[in-house]
Image 1 (cartoon, rainbow, N blue to C red):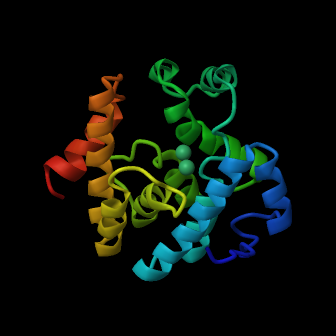
Image 2: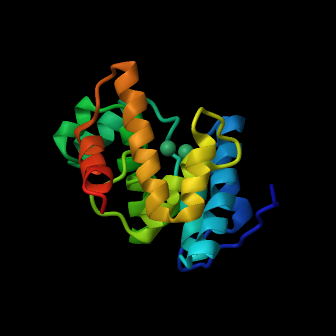
Image 3: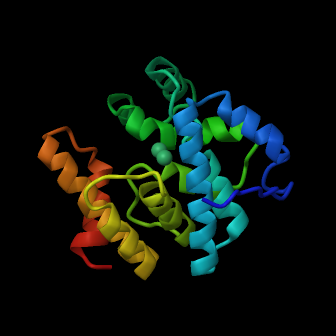
Length: 201
Ligand SMILES: [Fe+2]
Ligand SMILES: [Fe+2]
């Protein structure tokens, strides 16, 4: 992997790269910290390929899992205090670290850019409407070079074809995986599937 060393524009984040990395690594295990740096690099490469804003893509990739290791009780407290959709209380970390994570990223890292925050919000289950940046982060998280699961090569091939193909493959693959495990499926995951796969948008 290339060594990413991007300094982000002060309009996007006031912290220097060193300060930003210190704050992120303080919240994450070594393995997950390595993951977010690989997602950053993958996001930058996809942004260059597809003509998406490289700074926003890299920064969104770097921060996307910032809140992943917060406790369930902290997430629930924020959902109540900040009056998020009360239905979120029945979800879990898999959903919270995106939707509620964006709140923590804004508050603790001082990133106010709505395009970046939306890409973080949507990286877990996708959404019916996704911008190019949303699609890019959703896909980069799934195909970063550390990922190793049956189907990852197909996922990478789809992402090399187009962002939409990458999203479609990921949404189908994830839904099949959840069905096979017979776990509860968050309704927004079905909405994303219907919008991106069933209707062949
Ligand atoms: Fe995540
Ligand atoms: Fe991730």
